Image (cartoon, rainbow, N blue to C red; front, side, top):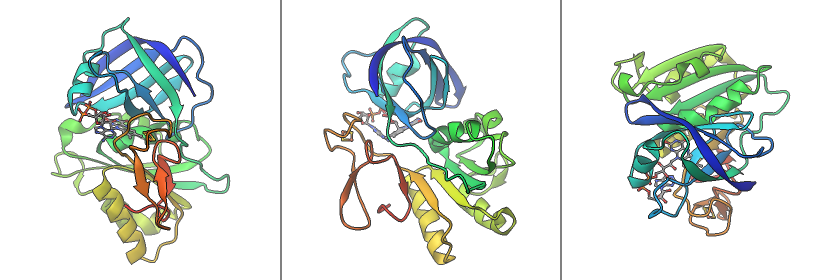
Length: 253
Ligand SMILES: Cc1cc2nc3c(=O)[nH]c(=O)nc-3n(C[C@H](O)[C@H](O)[C@H](O)COP(=O)(O)OP(=O)(O)OC[C@H]3O[C@@H](n4cnc5c(N)ncnc54)[C@H](O)[C@@H]3O)c2cc1C
Ligand code: FES
């Protein structure tokens, strides 16, 4: 993990309220695993805390993240211009570990939760990915080319304006018999991850399942304890350092 001063290569809107930002690092950050994230300065010096985003692509020294504009930090970041200098801390967190013998991987993504799943598909060409991704509506749909690398892709929306009117978890469980999943990986809002956990329990389904959690963060390196979540055994875990990827049965959702 290192902190470097990156240079903005491009920043453009890719869907309603969603931007893709590519920065160039001055030196290699080493190997980056799908599901790892970075902390990046917003470009507004009155906001010192960096913001965490899943790494979507790492190509040479170019690193891409995609983000939804939420509050003042992401508003500032959406105005980044080519040549701007932004401090970045990366790579952070553990990322998704796919066991060698897991061939059929179900990918469940909701909203901005789709972003950290993209590099997992891109960097594991030997696996069969079955992706189910959900968006609020057709204006939010983006980055389908990345998910088209899956063996099967199902896109759903909350209002049915693109694909079926459904959510990613339901869409997968309707298909479950035909997929024969060795593993499920998921990232999305808490309501989606809770629904996934409940559905697996209801169906007595013990398919190994990894989820990437999102918590408000401060330092991103395990020091401030802002991001603590509850584990099922009653202990605490730091989402930034012990996660953000956990076994679904390991954490309270
Ligand atoms: C590991 C991880 C990966 C993430 N990946 C993505 C991604 O790929 N794309 C994306 O759009 N969003 C992602 N998020 C959420 C993103 O970090 C927040 O939306 C963003 O920090 C909001 O900043 P803001 O200044 O606009 O919002 P404000 O509400 O003004 O932020 C105020 C403070 O709260 C923190 N904060 C607010 N919401 C969140 C949140 N949901 N998670 C963590 N910190 C938060 C901010 O970092 C800031 O310190 C990720 C969060 C985590 C923890
Ligand atoms: S953000 Fe500081 S410990 Fe996780």
